[in-house]
Length: 89
Image (cartoon, rainbow, N blue to C red):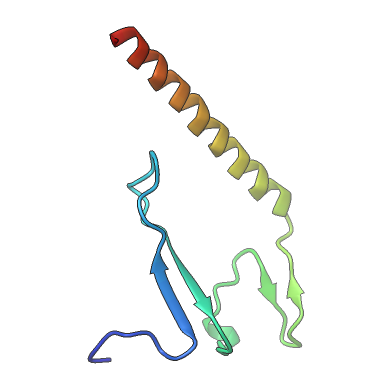
């Protein structure tokens, strides 16, 4: 607790700056041979049953559709900004 270093088997890191969305700070967490009690898991969409089986979220395709829509908005926004830049040049 004094050094704030990760425990053995836990790797954390920062993804770094993202183009256009630097207001969101994203990172990653990798657990290698680490056991998490079920009551400490965040299981809002996906679940791990008491017997250890993984249960997919009921609307996984909706989440994927939302992600694709946001990516399309990023491309559209980039095109709009490039048009403005060309007009200024």
